[in-house]
Image 1 (cartoon, rainbow, N blue to C red):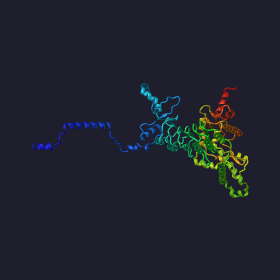
Image 2 (spheres, rainbow, N blue to C red):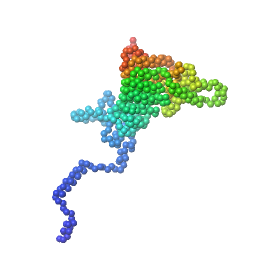
Image 3 (cartoon, rainbow, N blue to C red):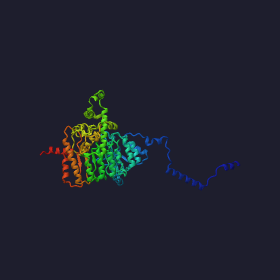
Image 4 (cartoon, rainbow, N blue to C red):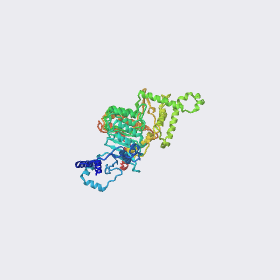
Length: 558
């Protein structure tokens, strides 16, 4: 009996009934809280590293790569990659490339009012529209991003997945909220992309700093650039004009530039015209829907016909001629060491010009045979440009016109020679596109670019005149503020270029000048004599209209 109390005394005291009840309820509440708020799940070792987007290796399939990179970057919702809709196709932007619409699901969603309302607003969901190669429906050819903001985080994802696209040719960004910083990031991504990328369109992205000229840097490979609706004013046009060409630098890759729907005035048009003075690669320029008046129109017309060189341009031309002469003398045959130079010292001045003509003729003869394997680096192109300039020897400052005509042979760029060859042009809406696709290939194959300052010039009244820019094929000035005063300037240009093309023989090669000139919807009457004369003179030069006219004459003979 004595042992029992001691045993009971050491045992724990029995809880009170009320206390036991409350503790039981607290336990149940704790269990419910644990069920409602689950604790953090510990990831196994190495799981965090595998989810790092930097560790992911892209496969080249944009839909897979983009979704995986977005997931690894922490996005719960992100735009889907969809095929760009065609006019004859039903647009289902919510369906990704791998998803196929189910007829049963479509009927069920149509019967539900909520789902039908969602389907109406699915159009506004952010998507990445793509165009695929016809041979392989997984290879992306063009990318369209429209109406949603692309920030630094998203550009980081693009910097991983875009370079993996081996057939990417074009990127279109419309109203994506670019800033100066994000544009710089986007420009840094472009060199990483495939060498097939040739077209960039940034439309509806006004940036106060207007840094769009950075897309036209000397090392840029962009051939087609569209900058419509970006509020570009005269300051932005100045930067773009300097990117086209200056006295010591020139863009050699850009083929087409679209500056429509901006705020460019007379001053900005003058800057663009200054860029066209020494640029010999731009074939297509649109300044439609701007604020250009007669002063700016006359500036543009001035560079399309013979214009006077400034003092700095004359000095630079003389420096280039001296450099060219010294290079030709250094490349002269070594036989002059054996007494030829002592026997005929009076011929030293003429030998330079003869060597120039001979070397340039041999280069022109060899050029068509090796176009397929003449893709060289930009540095090698620049070196060849310096060595292959046209013009007179420094000691032949007062050369005759026959010498100028001889020196002009073989000095035109390869694109300019090929564009005048009579390839059959198809009629229809795709003709201009095909012409510029051919010009894109021609510019890519160019191995010899002559400095325009070394072109044959004309001396009049102590002044030096260049023949003007005849490489530009298309100029669009639709819906500006040009009156008949500015119209007269373009009439003079068209008359000069028509006369110039008539003087050329059929065997001669070189640029032909404007083939399209759009001046409609300006501040002059459509029936004014100057405009009617321009239309009449340009009709035979337009390859599309002339081809249509020939087909009509064949179909309906008179």
